[in-house]
Image 1 (cartoon, rainbow, N blue to C red):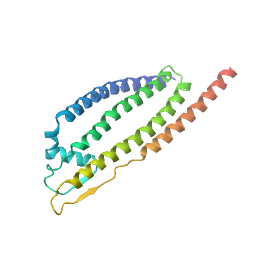
Image 2 (cartoon, rainbow, N blue to C red):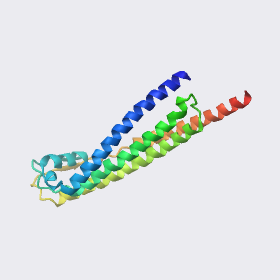
Image 3 (cartoon, helix red, strand yellow):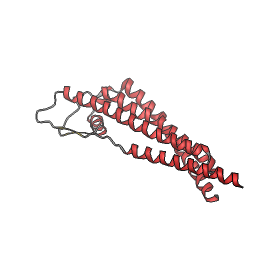
Image 4 (tube, helix red, strand yellow):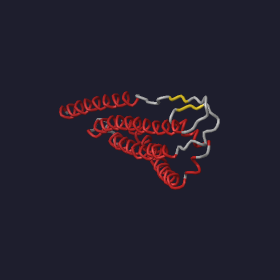
Length: 195
């Protein structure tokens, strides 16, 4: 039990550091998003930013100059992905830290552990679905902006759908861990009653 407690304490300290770093990054993302929405029109007309938007959305373009394409309408969706994802990830870290609390005290089969595993499973599903929806909407805006633009003849656009379903496997594993730890709680209760 001492080893488990020691590992849980180390993980908790690591996650606390990651939590604060992500909090600072989320604040910076909000500031950058606000600046870009207010006065970022000139930046979006630069080729580098247009290429970044295309790359982020899984779109390859063989043309040389895409600075004429107005991609400002896609920025709110990209900003939403980062601004919304940050607090969701922070919440996930908070849940993991709550799960580690009884483990730090040497109680791995506490009721809070299985409940927090189940919360993390739902968190994984919600986050994965939200990410897919936001990316699909962002990709739609980019494609519509490119189709409305007067691209040179012979330009080829290729679209790669970047949907990752690994969040479903992660959620299933977290739900299984929840059931395993709940069974461990029952065994621990029975062992405590027999003593």
